[in-house]
Image (cartoon, helix red, strand yellow):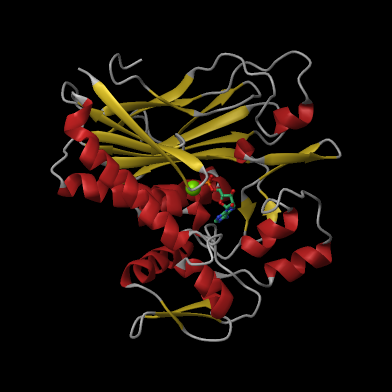
Length: 354
Ligand code: AMP
Ligand code: MG
């Protein structure tokens, strides 16, 4: 079976669409339409584009009701529901805290307790009022803003998949920088698309302990798969603290923040979620890093059929602990690995399954 790949740079990453079949010309129009949909979503959601609806909300919503399209309103409602279902672990109003740490502008520094308290006071989805009657948004506190970066890539993938489905495509694989994926149907000659969630390489002798504590290492050794997920009409998203991080005084700080404390998550290093759509998978994988393995039970109750995996440091930091629900067919199992360097998602070759 031959596979055709199409790609588009958007939302600060590279989206790739894989379609089974040939020749390329047969699929070009529908693939371009699906990738154009990602651009359309970015134009609506990016807070960096002055013409976007989100930029408009951020500029006006503290002083007036801002009217938005039904589509964006529905997405904000979903983001609010995700905030409720994750007990506040996923929060699109976290921007002021991310900005304070410097993740927003690259000027990374340790904030003072007072600065942190001030930024945290601007966070909370409960202060985003969504008025269904007139499709308006208002902020209850001046100085707050929203950023859909933690959910937008998944939403763009779902929008692209809707275009594919409408065009009659029944088999496709689409991902945003390998971190959020949707598998439409299955490859023609298989029951499911297979995706490996890669485990950490063996720790390198003389590796930097700060990096190792965060589960990353500058030297990349060979990796093995923690598990192979079979996907068919569902989404997988993986969030890892070392996706972006910095070092201060020999300590590593990752880019996923616990909204309840304003502090970067330290113990859980990776969260992976498989569920029905990429929008929720994207948000829930971030939330799972915040909640850790202890949050799996509540998520499993709120999202029936969800599959999850976390990688965390053991209490004494000597081992990595892998917890899974619904993956590998063995539920809620926990096993230990040596301290690690990194975990990433690798899409198995559709041709070989390896
Ligand atoms: P992801 O890589 O999908 O897990 O998204 C992580 C990005 O979302 C970070 O780089 C931050 O910009 C933002 N973020 C960090 N912590 C949170 C959180 N608790 N809730 C929502 N967004 C977050
Ligand atoms: Mg995410």
